Length: 196
Image (cartoon, rainbow, N blue to C red; front, side, top):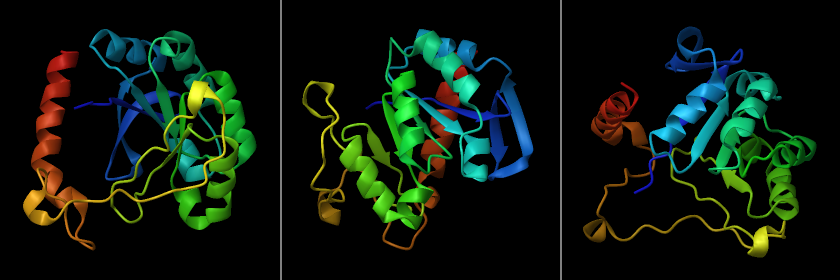
Protein backbone atom coordinates (compact mmCIF):
# COMPACT_ATOMS: atom_id res chain seq x y z
CA UNK A 1 0.00 0.00 0.00
CA UNK A 2 1.21 3.49 -0.82
CA UNK A 3 0.17 6.29 1.52
CA UNK A 4 0.52 9.66 -0.17
CA UNK A 5 0.73 12.58 2.26
CA UNK A 6 -1.01 15.76 1.16
CA UNK A 7 -0.10 19.39 1.63
CA UNK A 8 -3.07 21.69 1.19
CA UNK A 9 -1.93 25.21 0.35
CA UNK A 10 -3.85 28.37 1.19
CA UNK A 11 -2.23 31.79 1.01
CA UNK A 12 1.19 30.13 0.87
CA UNK A 13 0.66 28.13 4.09
CA UNK A 14 0.02 24.45 4.84
CA UNK A 15 -3.55 24.19 6.08
CA UNK A 16 -6.58 22.01 6.61
CA UNK A 17 -10.07 23.25 5.87
CA UNK A 18 -13.04 22.24 7.96
CA UNK A 19 -15.51 20.64 5.55
CA UNK A 20 -14.18 22.65 2.61
CA UNK A 21 -14.85 26.03 4.23
CA UNK A 22 -12.10 28.50 3.24
CA UNK A 23 -12.86 30.53 6.38
CA UNK A 24 -12.52 27.57 8.76
CA UNK A 25 -8.77 27.01 8.51
CA UNK A 26 -6.20 25.28 10.69
CA UNK A 27 -2.64 26.30 9.76
CA UNK A 28 0.00 23.59 10.25
CA UNK A 29 3.00 25.40 8.82
CA UNK A 30 3.94 28.66 7.19
CA UNK A 31 6.81 26.93 5.39
CA UNK A 32 5.49 24.45 2.77
CA UNK A 33 9.00 23.45 1.61
CA UNK A 34 10.00 22.49 5.17
CA UNK A 35 6.76 20.50 5.53
CA UNK A 36 7.53 18.66 2.28
CA UNK A 37 11.02 17.84 3.57
CA UNK A 38 9.47 16.60 6.82
CA UNK A 39 7.20 14.22 4.88
CA UNK A 40 10.13 12.98 2.80
CA UNK A 41 12.23 12.41 5.93
CA UNK A 42 9.29 10.48 7.44
CA UNK A 43 9.41 8.06 4.50
CA UNK A 44 7.00 9.53 1.95
CA UNK A 45 7.50 8.06 -1.51
CA UNK A 46 5.19 10.54 -3.24
CA UNK A 47 3.67 13.90 -2.34
CA UNK A 48 0.23 15.30 -3.13
CA UNK A 49 -0.29 19.07 -3.26
CA UNK A 50 -3.55 20.97 -3.45
CA UNK A 51 -3.71 24.65 -4.38
CA UNK A 52 -6.88 25.43 -2.41
CA UNK A 53 -6.94 29.07 -3.47
CA UNK A 54 -6.50 27.91 -7.06
CA UNK A 55 -9.31 25.38 -6.77
CA UNK A 56 -11.69 28.09 -5.60
CA UNK A 57 -10.40 30.76 -8.03
CA UNK A 58 -10.16 28.45 -11.04
CA UNK A 59 -6.56 29.47 -11.68
CA UNK A 60 -3.17 28.92 -9.99
CA UNK A 61 -2.56 31.01 -6.88
CA UNK A 62 0.12 29.31 -4.75
CA UNK A 63 2.78 28.91 -7.44
CA UNK A 64 5.63 30.32 -5.32
CA UNK A 65 4.93 27.81 -2.54
CA UNK A 66 4.70 25.00 -5.11
CA UNK A 67 8.03 26.03 -6.66
CA UNK A 68 9.62 26.10 -3.20
CA UNK A 69 8.36 22.56 -2.52
CA UNK A 70 9.68 21.35 -5.88
CA UNK A 71 13.07 22.95 -5.19
CA UNK A 72 13.19 21.17 -1.83
CA UNK A 73 12.03 17.64 -2.72
CA UNK A 74 11.10 17.53 -6.41
CA UNK A 75 14.30 15.74 -7.43
CA UNK A 76 13.80 13.06 -4.77
CA UNK A 77 10.14 11.99 -5.00
CA UNK A 78 7.27 12.39 -7.45
CA UNK A 79 5.07 15.39 -6.68
CA UNK A 80 1.50 15.73 -7.95
CA UNK A 81 -0.72 18.81 -7.84
CA UNK A 82 -4.39 19.63 -8.16
CA UNK A 83 -6.40 22.80 -7.82
CA UNK A 84 -7.06 25.55 -10.34
CA UNK A 85 -5.72 23.72 -13.37
CA UNK A 86 -7.97 24.71 -16.25
CA UNK A 87 -5.71 25.16 -19.30
CA UNK A 88 -2.85 23.51 -21.18
CA UNK A 89 -0.43 26.39 -20.57
CA UNK A 90 -0.77 25.91 -16.81
CA UNK A 91 -0.12 22.18 -17.13
CA UNK A 92 2.95 22.78 -19.28
CA UNK A 93 4.31 25.40 -16.89
CA UNK A 94 3.86 23.12 -13.87
CA UNK A 95 5.47 20.14 -15.60
CA UNK A 96 8.36 22.33 -16.74
CA UNK A 97 8.75 23.48 -13.13
CA UNK A 98 9.26 19.85 -12.09
CA UNK A 99 5.86 18.42 -11.16
CA UNK A 100 5.52 14.73 -11.98
CA UNK A 101 1.72 14.69 -12.30
CA UNK A 102 -1.07 17.22 -12.69
CA UNK A 103 -4.52 16.41 -11.34
CA UNK A 104 -7.56 17.52 -13.28
CA UNK A 105 -10.83 17.42 -11.36
CA UNK A 106 -13.54 20.00 -11.92
CA UNK A 107 -12.27 20.87 -15.39
CA UNK A 108 -12.55 17.21 -16.44
CA UNK A 109 -16.25 17.27 -15.67
CA UNK A 110 -17.02 20.74 -16.95
CA UNK A 111 -14.87 20.53 -20.08
CA UNK A 112 -14.19 16.97 -21.32
CA UNK A 113 -12.55 18.42 -24.44
CA UNK A 114 -9.90 20.00 -22.21
CA UNK A 115 -9.29 16.66 -20.53
CA UNK A 116 -8.86 14.98 -23.91
CA UNK A 117 -6.43 17.68 -25.05
CA UNK A 118 -4.45 17.45 -21.80
CA UNK A 119 -4.15 13.67 -22.04
CA UNK A 120 -3.12 13.93 -25.66
CA UNK A 121 -0.49 16.60 -25.02
CA UNK A 122 0.82 15.35 -21.66
CA UNK A 123 0.12 11.62 -21.58
CA UNK A 124 1.56 9.92 -18.52
CA UNK A 125 1.45 13.12 -16.48
CA UNK A 126 -2.31 13.54 -16.03
CA UNK A 127 -4.39 12.16 -13.16
CA UNK A 128 -8.17 12.48 -13.27
CA UNK A 129 -9.73 13.12 -9.87
CA UNK A 130 -13.28 11.82 -9.97
CA UNK A 131 -14.47 13.67 -6.88
CA UNK A 132 -17.76 14.61 -8.54
CA UNK A 133 -18.92 11.01 -8.90
CA UNK A 134 -17.18 9.94 -5.68
CA UNK A 135 -15.75 6.88 -7.41
CA UNK A 136 -12.05 6.00 -7.72
CA UNK A 137 -10.21 7.16 -10.81
CA UNK A 138 -6.77 6.10 -11.92
CA UNK A 139 -3.70 7.78 -13.23
CA UNK A 140 -2.97 7.46 -16.91
CA UNK A 141 0.12 5.24 -17.13
CA UNK A 142 3.46 6.92 -17.75
CA UNK A 143 4.59 7.12 -21.34
CA UNK A 144 7.71 5.11 -22.32
CA UNK A 145 11.00 6.83 -21.48
CA UNK A 146 9.09 9.70 -19.85
CA UNK A 147 8.02 11.01 -23.25
CA UNK A 148 4.83 13.01 -23.53
CA UNK A 149 2.75 10.70 -25.68
CA UNK A 150 -0.81 10.64 -26.91
CA UNK A 151 -3.26 8.61 -24.88
CA UNK A 152 -5.90 7.01 -27.03
CA UNK A 153 -7.76 4.81 -24.57
CA UNK A 154 -9.24 5.68 -21.19
CA UNK A 155 -11.17 3.29 -19.04
CA UNK A 156 -12.66 3.36 -15.60
CA UNK A 157 -11.29 0.83 -13.14
CA UNK A 158 -13.17 -2.43 -13.11
CA UNK A 159 -14.23 -3.74 -9.72
CA UNK A 160 -14.57 -7.45 -9.06
CA UNK A 161 -17.94 -8.85 -8.01
CA UNK A 162 -18.87 -8.01 -4.42
CA UNK A 163 -18.01 -11.49 -3.14
CA UNK A 164 -14.43 -11.13 -4.47
CA UNK A 165 -13.66 -7.68 -3.09
CA UNK A 166 -11.08 -7.27 -0.38
CA UNK A 167 -12.12 -3.69 0.33
CA UNK A 168 -15.74 -2.71 0.11
CA UNK A 169 -16.65 -0.23 -2.60
CA UNK A 170 -19.87 1.65 -1.85
CA UNK A 171 -22.66 1.27 -4.40
CA UNK A 172 -23.15 4.11 -6.85
CA UNK A 173 -24.89 6.99 -5.13
CA UNK A 174 -23.62 6.13 -1.64
CA UNK A 175 -20.93 8.55 -0.50
CA UNK A 176 -17.50 6.94 -0.33
CA UNK A 177 -16.63 8.73 2.89
CA UNK A 178 -19.39 6.93 4.83
CA UNK A 179 -17.50 3.67 4.66
CA UNK A 180 -14.10 5.30 5.03
CA UNK A 181 -14.53 7.25 8.28
CA UNK A 182 -12.77 4.63 10.43
CA UNK A 183 -9.94 4.25 7.93
CA UNK A 184 -9.57 8.03 7.76
CA UNK A 185 -9.29 8.21 11.56
CA UNK A 186 -6.67 5.42 11.58
CA UNK A 187 -4.65 7.24 8.92
CA UNK A 188 -4.90 10.51 10.85
CA UNK A 189 -3.52 8.77 13.94
CA UNK A 190 -0.70 7.24 11.89
CA UNK A 191 0.19 10.61 10.39
CA UNK A 192 0.04 12.26 13.81
CA UNK A 193 2.50 9.65 15.14
CA UNK A 194 4.82 10.25 12.17
CA UNK A 195 4.90 13.99 12.74
CA UNK A 196 5.18 14.04 16.52
